[in-house]
Amino acid sequence: MSFDEEKFKQGAEKVILRCRPGDWEHALSAVAWVKKLGEGRSDLPLLISAAYIHDIGWRDVWAKDKITFAELRDLEQLANDNSHQFAKEFLSNLDYDQTEIATIIRLIEAADAHDSKQEDEAIVVDADNLSKLSFEHLKNKFDPGDWVELCEMWQEELPQRVKTEKAKALWPKLLAELKGRVFLELKNYSK
Image (cartoon, rainbow, N blue to C red):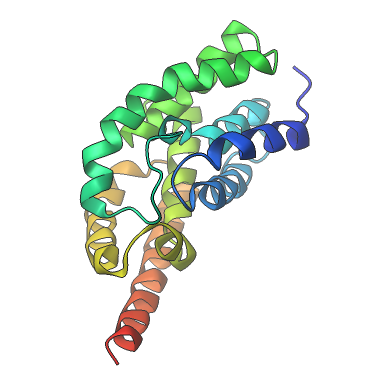
């Protein structure tokens, strides 16, 4: 497969902009993390492809501005159920073969489940999780009333979710920085 990332990115942007607010920025961040975690791998183009569209199941599911954590939990299964078909349609239109499509869908499904069984899945799942540990992610996607709860959930769940050695080393520092920023921002909101 000859991977034209710019062409893929342009197509992915059109689809992911139909998802939740902030999903496109999140996808770009996940791609950047995939490139760091998967550096030197021969299957990196497939990992990058999966990272760009890992939230494709949210297409046309949420049309409002920011989503609450409760709304996310209520709609997450519907979005996850959409992922397979939406990704297959998107990738088929770009002439990916069936083996490549099956691999990318498997990677997306691992991200949807927040769980990896194979090394390639771990890279995508870890990239997805690391990309969430930024203040911009929280600010773009969630109401400030949910920020503390999300940080607490990540504190509890990331030790089980994160599998690559690089991500294991990175996430505690990223989460600590995020929690510090959340504290400052919420303190400013209350003034």
